[in-house]
Length: 394
Ligand code: ADP
Image (cartoon, rainbow, N blue to C red; front, side, top):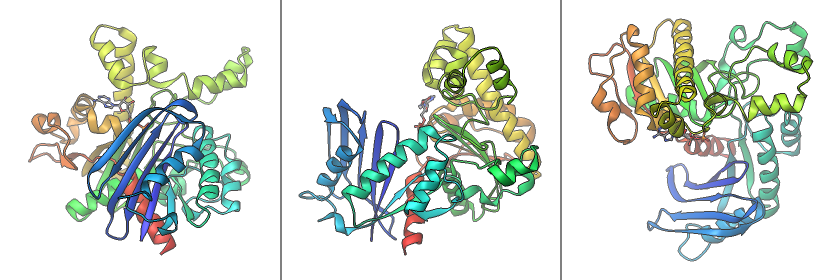
């Protein structure tokens, strides 16, 4: 059975076609700068290793990007002879009111996503638009949303609730939702595959968005993400944790709601503090060149990871595995080194050479005698989505 997984960004589309249950990747593609006449398209046929890349393309909307991919997928030498071979399309959807697991994207579920547009505008907006395009272009395929909140449904209420008037929870659903579920659950699966069990684990997904997840016996038991994707560790350009009273205070001084939202969601995080970039590589370069605010941003970023890792270790009653994943987690040996060194008191001893070694699949980076194991697990959210989609329609 063929399952297509699509990852939707505000200006990008990624595709991966799986044969299930073998989990073999048949082809993958990526469209960047959707909505422009300068779009980039790359395609790889995993069956014969051929590929292509084109730039300067006119891709006004998601529909055009989807059509481009489908033409190659079903074209000569492609892994499918027609769209009807695709049993389902799985999406890494984020948030829908009342739907927190894996669900077919019925009108009711899409409406529930629309209800949370305000809470997750950068994610629900593009997904709603792209899903409508998929429905039009692939009317026969079943569409499945693997909500990023799914993995966190096991968090006990005593950790998921905020100390708000109880009716805010009952009436309005204000509670910690948790995101990055596809990534953290893949980390849990990988640990279980490598060692037979996850033990007490802290998974650090560090990328454009960052979150830590406490995992016990394969289940999420806490997360740094909250009701929205704003909280926890500071992100590329979103603030992370912030005293909620700061916002009404700023508004009382004359800032508009839109100005506040813009600051929280676009001008905060690594970008906001450094004033240099939302890309950690550039912030690190500036810090090394002596830029004090860039150095402060990196110091804050590392400290916030350490803060949550420490809090989660206390909740877990100890730590067996500390995992780094995501663009920063997988590629920044420096961030890993600094976090592990701050957690040395836990008995975590880093293997400096293993930490600095080039990426090569899931690997241990702690020293052989280390009491806490540290690992790098390359993110593979698409595989998790293919698995959940297959289970759902199976
Ligand atoms: P997203 O969360 O948007 O999917 P990724 O997980 O791909 O993003 O992470 C992207 C981020 O990873 C980049 O913004 C950059 O900050 C960071 N990154 C990638 N490579 C490195 C590196 N070698 N050193 C430090 N940061 C890196």
